[in-house]
Length: 175
Figure 1 (cartoon, one colour):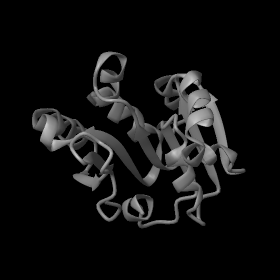
Figure 2 (figure 1 turned 90 degrees about the vertical axis):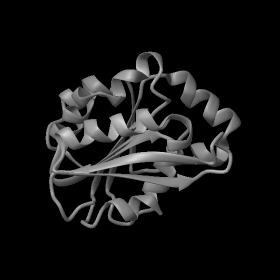
Figure 3 (figure 1 turned 135 degrees about the horizontal axis):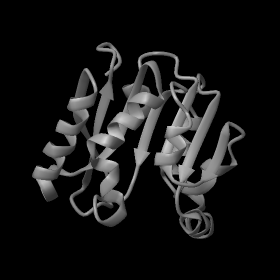
């Protein structure tokens, strides 16, 4: 699983920004070391629709480890410094308001919300659809974190058959 791949430490506290379908929460909750999951989704309608039409994904919302907040992830992270072992951003593509989730300022917010040794994983698109965007997102991650890398996973239902993400850490052994 991706979560076990991106963290070599005992991750007790995880923040998910976005992820309104509940799938990331579902997978993170399976990790035995995780004690608390904070999920921040800006749009309550995404959660409602997912619970109604994607019950196999939204089952993540039933985890006793999960605390769900319907608010802006930027504001949430500004109020939570050095609290999370892992931060995962499961966002929409960088269009409209979501553009802000792909900027250096967002990576700085994630850095500041991480505990020492923490790891971030953020949606970065696909090299097949927009190589320039992927390269720029990776560069933004590199500008903030000591270690940054691009990875991808096969997702047959996505238009390109895959999704990419950037990983970042201030600690060289975490990525």
